[in-house]
Image (cartoon, rainbow, N blue to C red; front, side, top):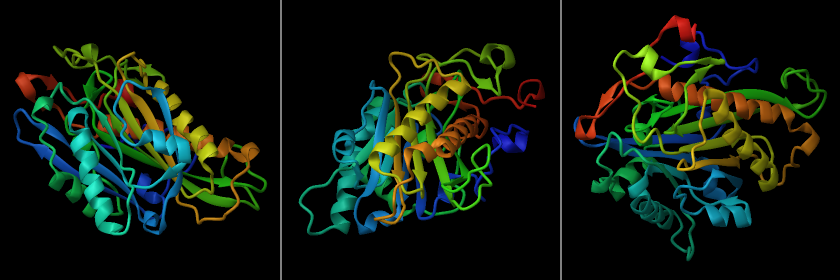
Length: 341
């Protein structure tokens, strides 16, 4: 069940109709899941902005901790432009996935001579035999070509099939918020007059350590799941993708991306030295639209923080108990009203 179905409501801002990153117009999501029921629990998740067909989009990457392999990030940092879909997968499959994205881009730009695939990862080696590197070009192309609107699958799917977070089984989660920017914005960042209503969406691949915290209440796996042990190592990284139709340049998108990593702290992230924590933010606003001025960014900051927090909770609440490589088990969060109600 998603967080809201359990009565866990994050913040006061309204969500989009799907409460998902796909509420941002033109943003599609696709998954390929690789699960043999035994040693392989992994996959690919692709976030595909349709407007990329017309060229690059303003974008930024924030590195909370750089213990990871985010292929293509330095060019995004340098130019402030996203040139490809964002693809997420497992650590040792990231390089094959990047090559597959190159195939995808070359097929759509036959005259191009330079491409910058953006591919991120987390380490799902607790539940999946990561050294087998099972992700193929076809897996990546299927996720990209199958990307669609609607509510994306969450939990143990795509790049989240084998991930764990905060002591529990985790996976993919998503959420969104609607806010008004510009004009006379009401308290809380919505319901203003004279401004424009925009959407902020987030998708997270959760695989990091810490103590799960739900609306300020700690939920230690050792206490709520009898006999459970924390996955070792206790999570390795988090990838967060933020999309918005608010007109923002790369610098301002960088400010949103930083807030996305900050939001991990709300759910109890430990920000361990071995956790590669990254956020990618991009805007699908039409080219030439004047950027939201810095003094008007507060509603967007609030939207990012709330959407990421809820996306992370959804990544856990939608996951199911999984036994994988070497017989290791990661337990789902129990729907216990003492903690979640």
